[in-house]
Length: 333
Ligand code: HEC
Image (tube, rainbow, N blue to C red):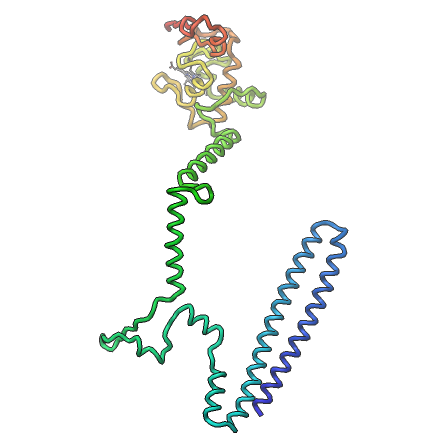
C-alpha cells in the first residue's frame, strides 16, 4: 500500500509543478509584454523596469525548473524502489544483490566529494592504519585532499609568473610595481591637496597666501583691523605703539607673504601679538590685504618710517639696471 501512495504522491507533485510552471511562464510573458509596449515609446525608466521584471521572471522560471527536476528525480526513485520490492519478493539472492548494488551506487555528489578529498571509505580504513597506538588513538595515513594540493600547485605556478612580471620582465599590466603604484598615488594625492588648498580658504599659510582684492574680503579685513589692530597701529594705519603701516618701510619684510607671517606669528618681544590663535587664516589674509590698501595713503600724524624700504619685486625686475640693494634705504628709528 505504501509504495502506491509513494507513486501517487510523486505523480501529484509532477502535475502540480507543471501547472505552476505554466502559470508562472504565462504570467511572466504577460508582464513582459505589458512592460515592453510602453517601454518602446516611453522613457528609459520604464525600460529599466521591464528589464528588472524580465530578470525576476527568469529567476522564477529557473526556480520552478529546479523544483521540477527534483520532483522528477524523486518520482524515478519511487518507481525504482517499487520495482525493487517486487523483484526482491521473487528473485534469487544474486539478482537481489545486483539490484541492490544498482540502487546503492553512489550519487554524483558523493562521487565528486570522493574525487575532491581522496578519502578512504570507513570500511577500508584498516588499509591505511599506521601501526602505532597512543592510548587507543590511531593514526590514519590519509592522502592530502587533491583540491588542496592543486591549490598549492597553482600558487607555486603563480609565484613564478608573479616574480617574472613584477621583478624581471613585465608580462602584463606593464609590470606595474609597488613603487610605480606608490608614485602614482602620491602624485594624485598632491593634485588633490593642491585642489583642496585652492578651495579651502582656511588652509592658507605663509607659503601660499595671496593678496585679496574683492570688496567683501577687504571690508571684513577693515572691520577686523579697527576692532583689534587700530589700538596700536592707529585708525588709519598711521602708527602708534606699533609702526606705521601706510609707508613702504617694513621691519619684517614688505611682501605680502612676509606681512602675513608677521601678523600670524607676531613679534612677541617687541609687543606685536601673534594672531594665529585669535583669527582664522582667512581672516589674517583679509586683514593683511586691507593693510595693503593703505599703502601710500599718508594719513595725518603718520609715524616716521621704520625698517627697510620695500620695493615690490616686479619693479626690480623691470628696472634691470638697478639691483634691489641700491633701491633699499635703511633708516634708524
Ligand atoms: C599691542 C599692540 C599691537 C597690536 C594690538 C597690534 N600690533 Fe602690530 N605691531 C605692534 C608692534 C609694537 C610692532 C613692531 C614690532 C617690531 O618692532 O618688530 C608691530 C608690527 C606689526 C607689523 C610689522 C610691521 C613691519 O614694519 O614689519 C604688522 C604688519 C602689524 N604689526 C600688523 C598688525 C595687525 C594686522 C594687527 C591686528 C590684527 C596688529 N598689528 C595688532 C603692536 C601691535
